[in-house]
Structure formats: structure tokens, C-alpha cells
Length: 289
Image (tube, rainbow, N blue to C red; front, side):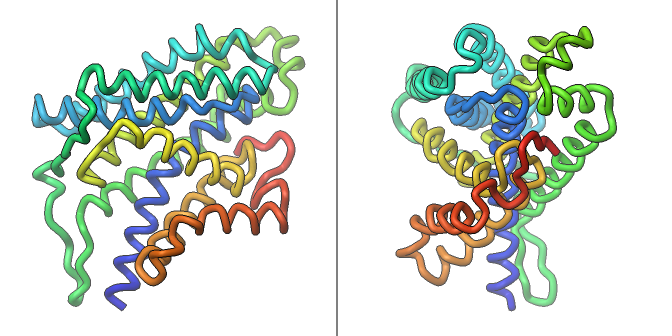
């Protein structure tokens, strides 16, 4: 039972970290129809900038805020100068955002060097909880709480606010929204910055979680997030949340019981879902919530 609960907690916490990256991709694709591989670069910048700020200030909350600010600034540059000129052209989007991710990942080495950087846990999140002999690491519980709160916040934003209504309407019919006098470009920028903030936050939370950050992790997690988005259903926030949990929990159990097959698991899950339900677990045309 102890092993099962620990693996479950590990899987859920990992899944919710993946969700932070996948949620941004889901929103960006759902509204803007943009395949944004550069999202992985924002993720790794969040990880490195958060780790650096934490090391310099010893304030984890300041590190998170700084990482989000840097991620949003980089996201604005990407959307304004790289992605906006290629709206509607998926091939050019793919090439440009892939190049953007490589530039962001390699530029990490200019500021922090080519070697991985070790990251410690915040003092107030060190240690573990114990329940009847079951040991659960505090930081993983923290990640789960943050992930669930952010999912709830995103759901409320999309389903209970005026800007959420505009986003959902834009997913269904961009021309209609523009005809109503809504600034679609401004809406696109808002969604892209929201996605960039989520990616940077995910990176900042991952740094202490994994204990080490390296420049190449952007590509690794971008691919994983795309797999999650496809499994959950393109444009479905709920689908991305469900798929993130499935991938995280299944990966934790597979890594423990069958480590040799753990790397192939995500592709196997992707293949099964596409064969059974090509639109993804909760994907429907135009869905954004």
C-alpha cells in the first residue's frame, strides 16, 4: 500500500506539472490554431530563471513571480514578432516555433553555461508527511495543490468571465467575434501570454521537483506536452488535464514496475487513443473548456 500511494502521489504531481505546460498549448491551439513548439523554450526559461532567482534571493515565491514575468516577456516577443506574421500557416508555424524553441534553449547556455544546474528545495517545503507509515514528500503535495488550484482558476476564467466567453466564442468563430468589434489580436496576445505564464510557472515548479535543470529539457517536455494535448483532445482543457494525469500516473507505475518500457509508454498511449478515438479523449471541434 505504501508503494502504491507513493507512486500515485508521484504520478499525480508529475501529471499536474505536465498539465501546466499542456494547458497553455491547449489554449493557444484552441483559439489561435497555432502549433507552438517554442512553448518548451518558455518552460526551460522558467526553470532556469526561477532557479537563479531562488539561489540569489532565497525566496521561492519571488523566484516563481520572476520566472512568470520573464516567461511572459519572452512570450510577448514570440507572439508579436515570430508567430503573428504566420497565423493560418501551420507549416511555417511549426518551423518558426521549432526554431524559436532551439534559440531559447541554446540561449540558456549564454547566461548559465552548458552544464546542468542543481536546484534545492525551499526550506519550508523540505521533508515529508507521514500517515500510518506512509511517507509523502511535502513538495509533491505542494505541486498537487498548486496544479489543482490553477486548473480551477482556468476553468473559472473560461466558463465564468466575460473574457472567457470571448475566448470560447473565438474558438468557435473568429470572424463572428471580430465582427462584433472585439479586438481579436489583443485576445490572441492575452491567450498567448497566459500560456507563456503557465509554461514558465511549470518550469519554475519543476526545478526543485527534479533537483536539476538543463537546457535540453525544453524539447523533452514540449514533446511530452504535445502528446498530452493530442491524447486529451486538441483544444480541450479538461482533456489536457485528464491526459496529463493519465500520462503522469501511468509513467510513475511503469517506471517502477517495468522501467525498460517506460520511455515507450507515452507513444503507446497516444497510439491507442488515436486508434480508438481520433479526436482525443475529450476533443470535439471547437472545444476550449
